Each structure stands twice: as C-alpha cells, then as structure tokens.
Image 1: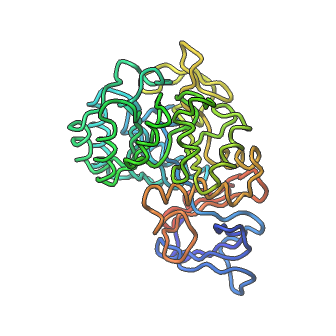
Image 2: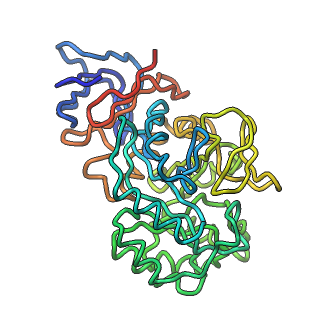
Image 3: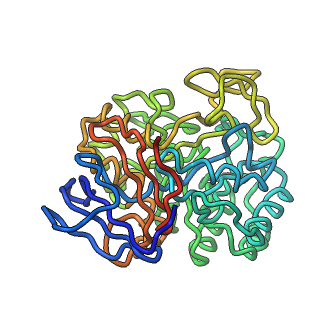
Length: 383
C-alpha cells in the first residue's frame, strides 16, 4: 500500500523516550513529527503502540531455508520477508569461504536490481576469512587465511563492502583496518584470541566495534582481559550483541549494558537459514546445522552456528534481561547501527527529512510487529 501522504499516531520513539504524537510521511520521507494532541485525520491510529524507526540488522546470514554465502542471489527473497519483524534495512553477511565467493557476492550486490518491496540492502558484511582459526566458531577452517591487502583492495573495488570482521592479532590486520576505514568500510574485531593490547591497537587503527562480543573469543580474565576487556574498557567502542538468551547469559547482557550504556550497544541477530523455519537441518556456508526450537548448532558438534533470533525479539529480550527502558532498546537496533554505518543523517530517527522507514510495535514490552513502512510504502501490516 502506498499513498501520497500517510499520517500515523501513537507513542513516538525519541532518543529520550516515547511521547504521544503523530508522524506524517510524504514521498518516501518523514515530512513532519508532532507531539501531544493534534487535530486532523490520521490514516493509522495506534493508540499506545510504539512508533519507531525501522530496525537495522548488521549481521544476517540468511533465513527461510536460504543461505547468503552459498546463494547471494537469495538476498531479495529474504529481504521481502524481513518487514514482518519490523526490519527495514540489513547487511547480508557472508562468512568464511573461498575468496571467489566474496567476489561473486559483492559483484551480485553491485549489479542487482531489487524486485519486490522489502528491507533495504545497505551493503555486505564480510565476516572472515581473516580470522583466528582457534576461535573460528562455526566457520570452516579450510578457508581461513592470513590477511591480504591486495585481496582486500580487490574486494573494495566492487563498492558494496560496508562491514568487515577480522581478528586483529593476525599478521597484517592493522594494515587492513587502516585501508578499510580509509575506504569508509566499518571494521569490527571478532573470531579472535587478541590480547587486551592487540584489541586496543585495533581500535586505535580504526576498528570501532566487536562482532558478537564474548562469542568466538577468550572469556574475560582478571589477569588477561583480552579482547573482551579491551571492548568493555574502551569508551569509544561498540559491542554488537546476540541477545537470544543462548549466546549470552542475561547477567552478562546486564553487565555489558551497565558498562557500555545504550549508546555503545548494537543488537544483531546473526540469524541463519533456519530463521522463520521449523526445526530441522539447514546449511551455513555449506556446513550442516541442526536447528531446534531455540538455537542453531553445527551438526557434528555443540558449536553455535548463528541463531534463529528475530530482531524484534532481541528488543524484547534486552528489556527483559537488563530492565532498560524500551526506547533505549529500540535505539540499539536503529539509531546506533545507523551511526556506525554513517547513515545517521537519514536513518535511525523519526525526524523531518529522514527516510520514511518506520516500524510499529504493540504497546508493552513484547514488541509485536503491527506495521512496517519502507520508503513511505506500507510493506507489512498485521491482519
């Protein structure tokens, strides 16, 4: 459904909290936001429901039985289904694989012509292959390789690489961080056995966040704080978290929230092909994964292999685990990823002139999706 103008009323998200009011959308952008009682007709009156910026997922491996690393051509199929959870934009994630796989995926994203309406593809997150094999998690060790500046330059040439996860202790990683950041590519540390000092060196070189903090890295130790300690101690570094109750104990989520504050936390799903599907056997970059009602694990071990978390459930869990106000949880999946990705001038807020990417969730802390708007067009509405 699209219209020249749409007016929504409800509890409007703001960085400081929710306030009753209305949002007006015209020609793909937010044309007005007003608070308090306003006269005039509305197209959607949501009462006490939350009206928020559209959710942004920075780490999504696939869904609905489809795996991006193996089949990058399925990105649009998954994108069309994501608005049912309030997701309006995402980074398809391509994990450790032969280098040719990245060329194929990045080239596809460069040349693709989006079809049916769906969540916007903001570029690629390449998670690997420059990782520490000892902390590979579910990544196939045969494709892990040492950092290569020439390889990175070839990947940068496609113009679709936006986010790179690497292990900063590997030889040549700091040079890759410098080159990537000079080319406006966001760099995260992850799948790493880095010491505290190596982690801080990566952040000084330009890395700005950690991929699924605490997972695929040594635990925090009182004499060897490691990468976890470096992230928690650095006030300028963001912690990307999978808040599904499996990757992180609720007490650890609370600890991170208290140390980093809402401003330095980004919620991600790291969801894989089992997202939106019944329990069964699925693939992650060619490896068999067993999905049950709550988790995804490699078929031949107990190793977690992504998740089946939805981003709206991550909001719900964040509020439940930490007691944070709902508007702060929303910021962790909207404003904060927009800031990291350099999009905070047009996404991640409900302000005049911003892209009309909007999600509406039922009042209360369950974050039940009611309506999703992308570029001013209604792409999901709960029956």
